[in-house]
Image (tube, rainbow over all chains, first blue to last red; front, side, top):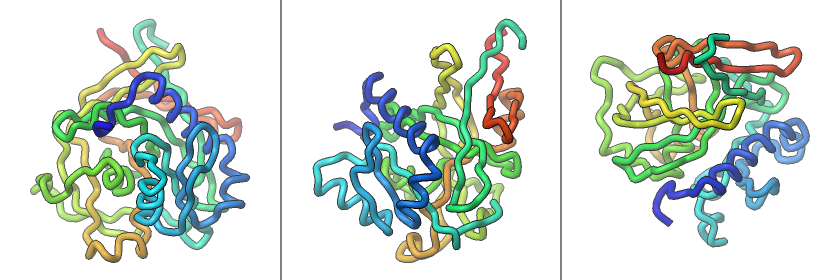
Length: 82
Length: 165
């Protein structure tokens, strides 16, 4: 797949996944504290403590990291003033 | 609301577990120079930030080559969440927002920055650079004449754009 070559349907799917994480953030953050998560169609398909490892795991499963929503569930200890 | 203006609805999400939720917005990022045709992303709307930037996490997964980008010579490395970043310039980019009726509006915006950590690469993960979100800053809000409607207690958050006149 060419970088970012998504059609309208795929764009809408990723937008839905961004919204799904936001709607369910409270639950997800407790269940996956400290993880990076890759989300597709309302499911966490891969998670890891390490972002670069997450990208590797996605590629091993044949999932292009650009075709999913990737989010960070930063631990409590990461609380910061931006 | 002016008849030509349009609104996009945002949402609230915490940056870390237990923190207060912050306002976020969805947009689609396009950067033909690096063959990024349509990247659906989210960004923190941060009135404390003077800059608008794509953070390291999304820059990495879209394979944006930091070394090929020029830094903004006018600016020294900036502090963001206790970390230092070099601001790399992204030219000829487009940000597309979806309004409340589902219509998409594209904005060509400069200067947009890519955040390159001012750290040895081996420390990026350990120091948490991938934890930080993309940011829509005051520069974007001011230049695009965006109005801000937010009511954190009710969960409402909207950006109002002036539209074409």
